[in-house]
Length: 154
Image (cartoon, rainbow, N blue to C red; front, side, top):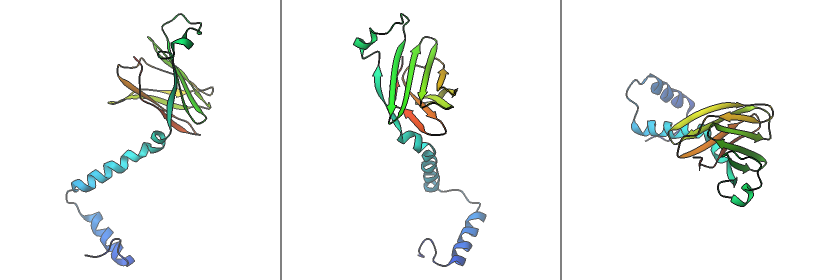
């Protein structure tokens, strides 16, 4: 068995050329490796996880200080200097991303993305009503990418 990669450039070129012209089926090991590599495309967003720092459903003492009479749930997430604040109501989610400066935010469940919206220059965004179960918000701007911790919003 020869070492990989071949020490000789000509041998490497020959082997790569043969691989390009091979029309046989792709082995299961190669498919698994390709799928595993594909999951790394969102690694930067998954590594920067904004942890839940405030939830009005849990922090009842602080909820009494709000002036709103509507059934609104307020949540705040933080990852370093990045803050994601949202309000969840019967009509959907409104939120603000700080630092601001535009970008996109998406909301996903275990089965995939259910809504996506632009973030304006001030950091505001709005999403549809979250489905039951766990939800994660993913925000991407020019300066950073962050995902919130998974949380049940309804």
